[in-house]
Amino acid sequence: MTSEGKYADIMQDPLFIQESDEVYRNPTEVKMSQIVLPCHANHCGELSVGQLLKWMDSTACLSAERHAGCSCVTASVDDILFKHTIGVGNVVNIIAKVNRAFTSSMEVGIVVNCEDLYADRQWKVCHAFATFVARRTGAGKVQLKQVPPRTQMEQMEYSLAAERRRMRLIHAETITDLLNSSTAQLGECQEYQDAVPAERTRVESVELVLPPHANHQVSTFGGQIMAWMENVATIAASRLCNAHPTLRSIDMFHFRGPSHIGDRLVLKAIVNNTFKQSMEVGVCAEAYKGGEPLRHINSAFMTFEVLDSDRKPCTVPRIRPEPVDGKRRYQEAVARRKIRLDRKYILSCKQAEVPVSVPWEPSNQMYLSFNNVTALKLMDTRNNWVLTSEKNKVRLYTLEENHMLCFKVEMNVSVAAEQTFHLLSDLRRRKEWDPVYEECEYINQADEEDTLYRVATPSVSKRGNGQDFILLASRRIPCDARDPYLIALRSVTLPTHPPTEDYTRGEVLCAGFTIWEESSTVTKITYYNQATPGVLPYISTDIAGLSSSFSSTFSACSHFLEANKDSPAALPLSALTHSMASLQVDQKPQQEGLA
Image (cartoon, rainbow, N blue to C red; front, top):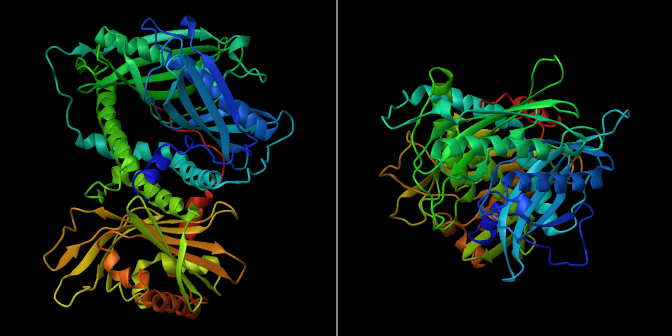
């Protein structure tokens, strides 16, 4: 991963950092400012989250249409965490801009800030990433032009958008697999004497889609549907606790189909489960017109809290689920909560925290992989590296920031980029050119793109033990010519491979290769490593200028690649290519959720 503070903040809030060049403005950027009036608020004097979602969706849609030059519809919205509520009289400032365009879809980043005009202060409320699909009437599928990144921040967002899109497209399948594997281990629902029957929280409401609810394509605004869903979810949560709940988060969801003017939208909500200070509400939206059967439009899972007078979470009542479906929803809510907590921990982990190695398990594989690749991409977008030494056309750079030392090694080889990627992907072959890799043991193929290894390294002192590392290696092929091949490495822990007396267990925060195709026969390789105490002794003399072992090591890497440039690939790329190719298509429907 990246260094503490700035890098960690970038990962969590990439859009909130403003560009230093005030002259340049992203051509897709759209700003909206709204003063919160009583008609926008609930009975507590706080802005309705449903109203905020409508404003966010409208701003993002305008940004998408500014880039596409045609009508756009909301396809999906990633997880949203609401950090603060907004009171009447405050001003809501929303900024949206297109981070990256794909075939006919694009990712739009949204940042919401709140402004107190009288106290002259601002604070962040939330950020979100929404996907929009361009629709041009009667002209076939739209081929969007790319958004060329011009600043370091835009380059970072462009690069990370590809990884977020990958996670977005496999999200539904991954969550379904995790739920299927987890619910069998959750046991029976616990019975509580004072539990509230879940049936008491059930809400059903119908809305008629009128022209003010629709866009210029007579399709219902995605934000309007989200607002209606938030309304019934809030009623369900209120029925449980007999108090006004506060919406804290919404899980990632996809729109499965459009609704139009004249449709009736049936919105259903029920409390799936309660935890000590929060509850999960499942909500779905279905549409019909006349005698047509119901069409499933969307499902979402919303987490609510009840706050006391000091704005602290209160304990919420227990829920007694209905038989069969209710118990299934109850158990799946437990699994989803675990997934949410894993995701929150992994994606917000600070580098000063010890241990940095996160336990690997199937339920957090997707987020560990995302975090692994994202951390490497963030290092790759840094532009303030300092050239420390150069020998035999191998360049060593260093970067010290926030008390963290990073280094990178760069060189060109006369080997095709794809073959270079093949050869470097299999860590078992690294010992053929890197003396630090004394042993490399294959542990497990987590999925088609992620592999677990145990790596043993020699002692840096005569009497000390060697070190070993449990590494997650995540591979990515490029989405387009602006992306490199990637091999990202980070430490994880495995119960099957605990530390032993023979080795000192080391940790890798972030390391790996970016592989850029310079031409059909020339490839630029960059190796990154965020130096931890376990890694630093191996390269300290190089950084101090007392040794050039890095040059010898990467010269050996160059010879290894050139000697094997015509050999069959060490790892078959067919499965990986097929997997990644499936992510090149635009948004696919998410599996139907449960409410």
